Structure formats: structure tokens, C-alpha cells
Image (tube, rainbow, N blue to C red):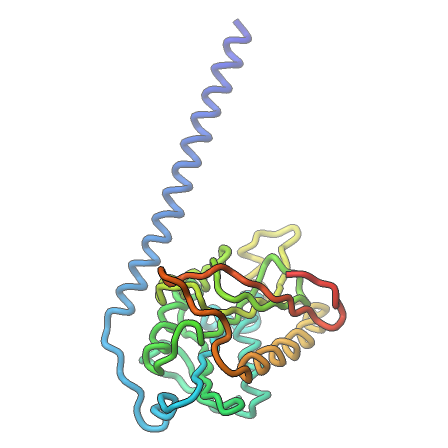
Length: 268
């Protein structure tokens, strides 16, 4: 009799667990579906073409868009390290005082030039989950192809101090990248992945939305310098930074490790 009760209890637990998994799956599915609906609504308006000095980006020659992914109004957090890198890049180029809001791309932009390449720097003024709306609008406004869009974002699967370039491929769970893939309808965009490490003793959400500690900031300073060096190297290259996309608008991910000097043997 007791054995029968154990079997019954086990079966009940299995049913509850199965029900929980189904509800969780439905929640995740509905959340992604809602995000896609928001993308479509925000992208349905007509785009104002580039005018005046902005139109120079449409002239002959290389055109690149560099985007620092993050949450608007949350500067200094781990999740916004991509925007921190973009700020450091603007400072290195001597244009840090040129940020200006552009409602037509839902973000802040700077127009600059690197090695005869027209460069647009973009900081979205949207939540991370819908950063792709700003990226798609800017790409359309300045006539920049997805393969010439360089995304800079935080990476949980790499410890702080590790940096790597990823040439296209899946979003790997990063909501900002997933938003860009959804809005641009392709995953060919190269990315600079800046490690922030996984949390210890706290949730992922609290970790990514938290600020760097005093000790981490010492490492971060070197990370910003190395990241800018890598971006300038990428922007100085002639031609496309990644292979052309095959039919279907997607390509296999290719990764090149770019560690800091202190750790020359790191892998992607």
C-alpha cells in the first residue's frame, strides 16, 4: 500500500512539474512574441531621409555603424558596458562632445570618419530588449548594410577582462542582439563581446543591472582601451568585416579570440 502511495505521489509531482514547464515555455514564448509585436509597431513609421551634413554618409566609400547596446538611463551598469566602450571610442576620436539626440533613430548619434570610412556611432534610447528598433532605423537612414553594423555588448559567458569578436551567428541568449537580429531580419552583424562574467550568489538580472565594483573598475579601464583598439582596427579594414550572407540571410558563426595582454592564452 505504501509503495502505491509513493508511486501516486511521484506521478503527481511529475504532472505538476510538466505543467510548470509548459507555463514557463508559454511565458517565454509570449514574451518574445510581444517583443516582436513592439518591434513591428515601432518600425512601421516612415523614415526621414538623411539631410544636410548627414547626407555625406551616403557618399561613395565605406560606411559603418557602431552600436553600443544597453538600457537608456542606466549608464555605468554591467549591461551597459557596450555604451561605455562607445563612449571611450568617441573620446579617442575626439568627438565625445558631439553626441546629439535623433528622434528619427530613437537614439543618440555621432558622425565621424576613421581611415576614410564614414562612421556612425549610435547609442539607442530604448530598453535593451528593443534596441534593434533604433539600430534598424539608423541603418535605413544612413544606408548601411547589416554586415557593416558592429554591435558592442556585454557577455555573461566571458569573465571581465576577456574580449572577442564574433562574426554573425545566433544571439546566444542576449536580448539586445536578439532584438537586432529580429529587426534587421539577419544575423550577419559582427559583434564585439565584452566579458562581464557570471554572478556568484545573486541572480543574473541583479548582476547585469548592477554597477562594477571598485576592483572591477580597475580591470574595466584596461578593457575599454583594448576594446577601442579593436574597434579602430575593425573600422580601418577595407571591405566587409565578414563573409557575405548566404541565401536566407544567415551565416555560420565565426569567432576570433581577442584577449587582453594580461591573458594571452584565453579562448573564445
